[in-house]
Amino acid sequence: NFLGEISGSREIVVISGRCYEREAVPYKALDSLIDALSQYLTRLPAEQADALMPRDVLALARLFPVLRRVDAVAGARRFVLEIPDVHELRRRAFGALRELIARLADRKSVVFFIDDLHWGDLDSAALLGELLRPPDAPPLLLIATYRTEEAATSPLLKKLFSSPPSYDTREMKLDELSFEEARRLAAALLLDDGDGNEGAAEWIARESAGNPFFIDELARYTLAGETPQPGASGDPAATSPTQATLDEVIRARLSWAPPTARRLLEIVAVAGRPLDIA
Image 1 (cartoon, rainbow, N blue to C red):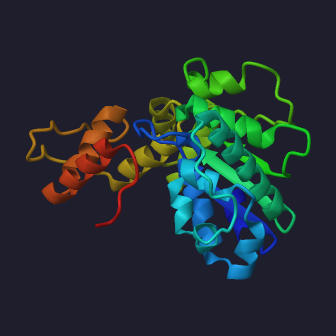
Image 2 (cartoon, rainbow, N blue to C red):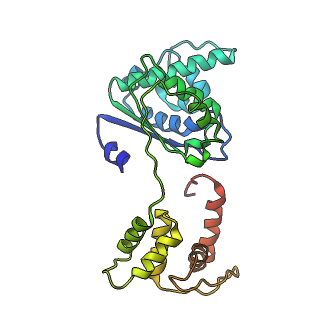
Image 3 (tube, helix red, strand yellow):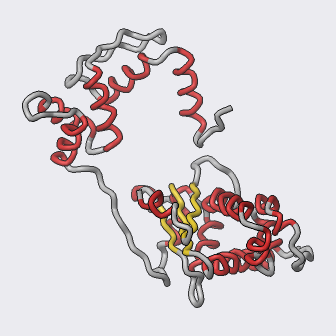
């Protein structure tokens, strides 16, 4: 993908993060992004990291404590005064992030990627707005994904879209595949030679509703060619390929897994965010 292609360049810095639906932290749209930024700064030689430090970096570290792990931040001899006023602290922290990105952009091309932006909060909207506002905004490519159906209810998206942006924007809408596109993808996954799996490809295109992930799963199920027996949990057996519904295919895939694997899947499914291997 695009980010993977540019990540190998020494002239480009790619910082990636994402929002989580049930995470309860301030600035949740940027929390993991700042975490990734702190890891990048930690890997830099000391003199390079020191050169990037903004005047009010310690104010920024008050908002994002993960930055204190960076030696250049922990040892910063900047204005260390306590700032009792919350609005003043926020103003300085926002300015510090803007300055840090500007200094980094003087040396490299900077790309920020935020996944699931629709789960962000109003604080994140304010910080993003400050980072991108003219004049003299740091040169930055910000790529963000969000679900269009969430645009009317997401506090962050409503704030960002409440007025025309003052910065250059491009919008790419990723709709579901058409029936014909889905059928062709299914046929390719089934290694269809034109006279064997046409019916299966059409069933997959119809049952998947154009979702590429479901197309892949339904193709795997079809190629397996099995009708599993009811599992230990009492799930009913699915019908044969090209007759099953998507729900039945999911239940069938679960019934193939041993009990320990099903238990792990249950934990992952309710966690709401990636988990450590341990």
